[in-house]
Image (tube, rainbow, N blue to C red; front, side, top):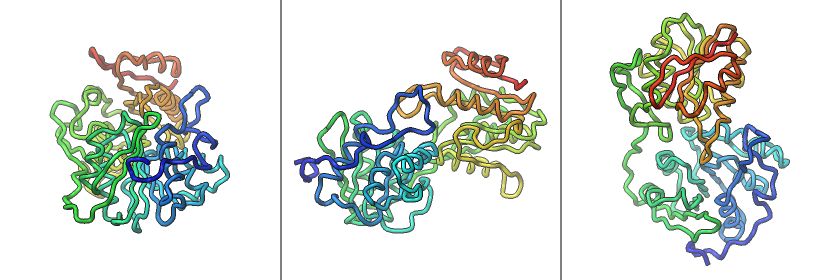
Length: 394
């Protein structure tokens, strides 16, 4: 017996290792799998417990990183709504459904802030890296969770902390864990409708300090899961005073915009520019939209907010200026693949004479990548930790 009281999980016909699964975008050099032991543990449990042998009703999957859980359930005939903060994760889910012979429409894809329209019968949670995102999503889903709703979480042992269990208990009800299997655990939560219901604390706001350029003193709005939610991170702080101003750039892109501070500064410093905020995180885009709205009342300035894989969808030669603070992590992996896609996409989208400005840790060596790609790279500012680089499309 497991600690949940259910029989020891038995294998199910559909497991990630038996499916055609890939991350998105695919990179033949990338050896990272599109699933892990936590996904497998959950799927084995769903196939082994008599209560869950045939999932029915409104099944919600939150945090499914590359669609392994959603694809497996869809192949078994389950009606699934997947809630994900990741555009790339949702693209992976769609591609994986197609690889395995299912219509992409058989899994309803939703962002964390999208409205839930019906009560939830089963909630499956792949524990996200961000505790704030987990808690915020549980708060959002709580009104639709019934006392009889089945709630099961899964994650690697290194991802499930006391604070993780406390989030489930604080928002939904009594929570316990399974034994570990292949360094993964399950979380079992029993919804308690009698729990007090204080307000969700998210989003958070804070004021930018003085002395950082055009954005000084402005309000920043951060939805849960957004990087550096309650303060200005040191890399962006170094970047902001260095940003080009009054360039006459017609189209500016804040690539990997996060909460939108860099794009806001560019909009303030270049009043005539059309600014586009791009990120693969829906929570980041919601933050950037709210940050921009706090600075520009409705009708006074327009901007575009785009969920995308880097610069996909931009016409070649259509952009004047790209501003970028690239991430160098993908979940638990350290990689420069995302930065390289951002750089190559920016070069393709920039007009001749257009510029890309990048801030990054000195040790990441972005100057070599930019020089290789653009044929030039200038250091515009540096300190012991960070460097600001400019590359021009020739």
